[in-house]
Image (cartoon, rainbow, N blue to C red; front, side):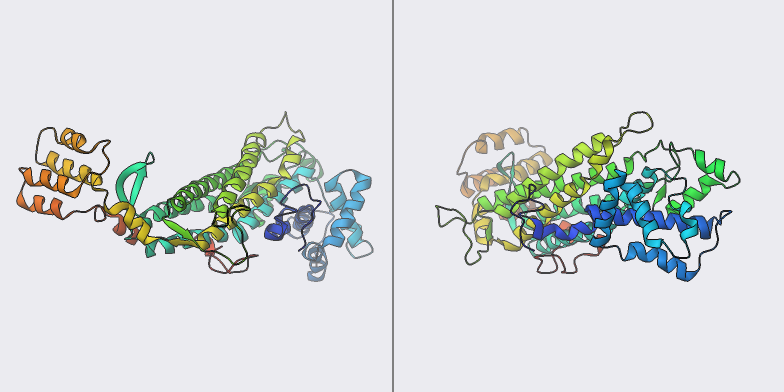
Length: 476
């Protein structure tokens, strides 16, 4: 796909080739298609499920004609809906008229007035957005995130025993391992992915102008419209919201936005940490022939993918923040301020997808620099002040912490000899003294490797099929 150099948004310009496939969910044409689906399925439901007086049971051939309208919906159809909207100045009414136009002259024409029967526009729109977001989460977002998790997990297992100095507050701290730090991210991501997948059965409503089935009851007073509404919404794979004003209040959508925002924050946290480890030389970066790191410094290999990810997450979360704050609020029974905001759902998700792709790409370039990591930790004997003072405390040696503080705090270049001299002077059991004398900074990693071994990776979302644009497979 050629870049549109005149595009205002980078989503439609610079980054279009990375996310153009998301238009199947979030474009204007996609919204029209989802609305067409809801209108037609509601029409079928009135006839074949409720069997309302004045309708008939639709034949398989008639069902095929009806469903083909949304199954075969294409750009030409989308353009036609927009042309109709020029007259109606109403996007949902334009879809209704489009469906009638498609069916004109056929066996269903006499029943045209049952298209959009007893519906307000929001009945169609809320269900359309719910199906749209659900499909995106299940088919694209969750598999991509699951792939990222699996990439991190594989790297964690491979490096579970690579000792690395920690840096709490940016200062030297008790050693960890590369694998354990990665498994921390895996665990956070998986927990939030499970939460996100639990939100895909989004709420929906189809209950008329102000949520009370007013017109429904006047037309067909003997129908249990509450139960009928519930049955229809559930048939779409959604959860029925029984109590609403004219709009479905969007609380369910906001839960999704908040969950994705938390995932984004986890990814951003990782981006910043890996950026720091690259700057320390703990991770190297594969180079690609022809690429340039700096316009003036030829040696540069910058961690730009993690920086791009961080920036795009910031954009995504700013959008999600606004949507979560705005969408649950509507004046009285309805105002239209949510409509324009909802049209930006795809923007928030697109910036998120860009971020994940950048992080995945950055990871694919990373090489664990074991020699650098080892050099960083091997002579940091001050790191053993912690276990020595803890063993001293265990043996009730008074002032254990203070003795080690005096020896090590704020003093660079603490030597093995100095610590061993102290250890040998301690009145502790011989076995414990021997253990402390055998301890090195590299060995002082606790149960880090075991914690990686014991982690049970879940495969939320099914992983990667290798079909993403620019994907090498197995990563998104």
